[in-house]
Length: 460
Image (cartoon, rainbow, N blue to C red; front, side):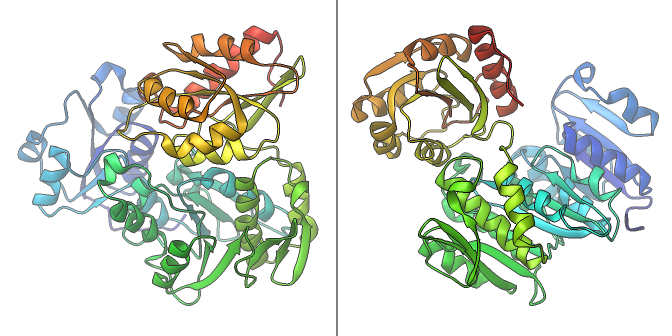
């Protein structure tokens, strides 16, 4: 951890008492700041309230009001990444000219380790995990840590990380909007689709937010970017770093790529694509991104292959759960957009019974029709978007379509639709917030329901 003095005796407002806000507040106190933490939840629902107050943090619960700025003089605002910039309290901070950052920016300021940042619409968590596992191979000293949007507050990691370590940080578009000086030595862009437009308003804003991952890089750094789209190739031209492409379609052979079912780095054969343990074209892309980083960091082909042939996937990301009566069950609760569900479906050659639905963000599902038609024989729909998904399923000619109120009702219906040799797949194509607090809670509930029906336990 670097010792910094910029926050000594500063008055800091932290907005949001989730993991990032709570840990930001704790770190700021250690750095000598005076901290007020505000959350929209009632005071008695703020889990870490007592612990925070013991170390000197003032904690306020209830509606977040601009009155805070009348009652207090702040030098800085650290906000939860999920709080939009057009909420009144953030608008007021902007009006007052206050710096507004997020917890990952604060974490990067004390970071002594080499920083590797990973962003993209899909594949961030799997790619982050693959990279970290590869970097933990063949080390003489130090360790690779994962942090950020993967569910581990970055400040708790960088506080302990040494100069011999690597920190592989998953960065969402929300997080990247709140950085100023965060500077990854290696930045990775897995892909960009049209996500979170309810937050970013336009696709351009979303793309610009993603590209902030490379804004502080220079010619000594590396930008690993998917070259399988002309748009993404164009975006790479914005970076001042050395561009290292990866391509599942073999469009560029200047970095990592797939050709005739084999994976290469430049002209060097690594392994066959079908040896990757987790299924799907998307995981070939994730593997290629990880390979590029591992080769930049001088890992051997043997180390890379060991990770890719043994890594069984990240929880809630096309995660294999169990097999029952010839049916394989997968949990892909992290599929919070159409593209993620498309990629999940394309990873299977077997017939699929799909469970889908969730928060209505105002878009239709016609893009999903070809994949439903090709892969899905039965579909069970729940949540706010179930009727919209029903329209897509009818257009695709899905044989069995059933609408239910919630996931608990969906699971037994889906299992009854399935036959030996089928895949039972939760891949919602929607965010979870209409019925669940997080996609993790949704995925865990799916696993519990499957275990109850089958009488089997999740396979680790």
